[in-house]
Length: 139
Image 1 (spheres, rainbow, N blue to C red):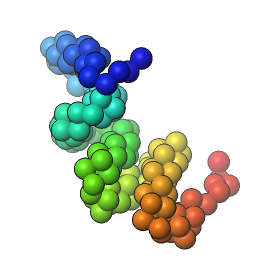
Image 2 (image 1 turned 30 degrees about the vertical axis):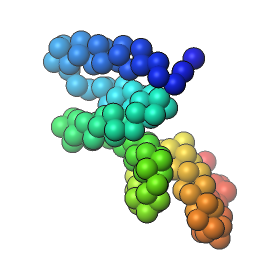
Image 3 (image 1 turned 90 degrees about the vertical axis):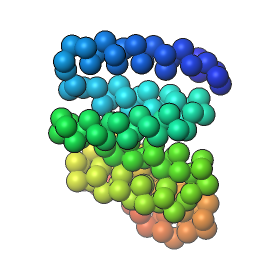
């Protein structure tokens, strides 16, 4: 169970990443970093979470492994919301949605759409929120 201030999961991840990188491999690491960034976010360590996202994006550029890109933008948007920066959050969520649609990853498209709809609802942009979340009939 995740408890505020319990960093043992992050500490374990950092050891794992060091061992993983020691093998010379980088493929697959992005997904693990995404989960660690999520954990750091849940623990309230926004700067550490943001740093992991940035490192993940750099790694994606190196490896071409873009599977997690949409969800990383979505997490970055959640950080922006916690930092009281809804404009950045909206830009990041729109980017997450665009990437998910290009990749045809319906789960990540749905997650980004829901977060964007929530943000717009908080900003009293209910019409936009409803318009962006149509029922999918192509799956």
